[in-house]
Image (cartoon, rainbow, N blue to C red; front, side):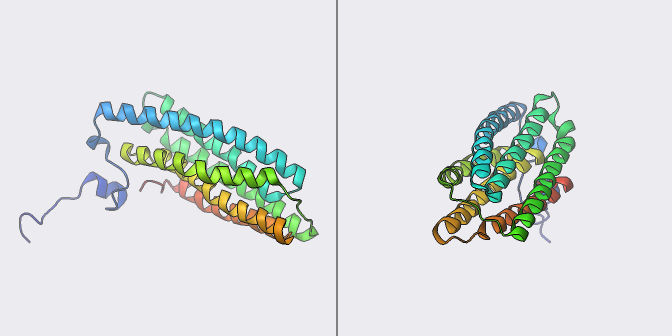
Length: 226
């Protein structure tokens, strides 16, 4: 092997299995770390604000229409608030790295709680054959979230990876999950409205639960960065 070919593994390789998903702490200057930490705090604050509004609208509209999918979407927004709050708490400390594991556990537990509720509610809806009503508010909310969430998620994910923070990346994936759920919710609500497929609503809710379980497992294991 030539001298040039003998390259020692870098910190990025050790953290990310060579994928380069996050920067090693030593590769980021103190000034840059402060900028990134401040950016994460602002993005988390924006995520919390949006999701509080999203949760209230989705829960009220879901109850009015009898839509388990909309209620599940609203609860996912509550989970996102809890997740973002955990990251905000982490980065409020002088040494965010010391709080990262605890923040990841909070994010994971919130995912599992969401999945448990949604599975129970969707199963009951399918068993009794209840029909969800039309919800114009729900359709508009899903469409708006489909546009807003990718922007917040992408910005936080980039900052979290450069900072080397698994919890910030995990929270960005929680926000990205909202994007997927917005698309699935929109399809389910439209199918119910256009074709009267009552079963589309609880099936969409079960998809939400399945994705939540997967994301919860990744957060619990701390796999979102590495």
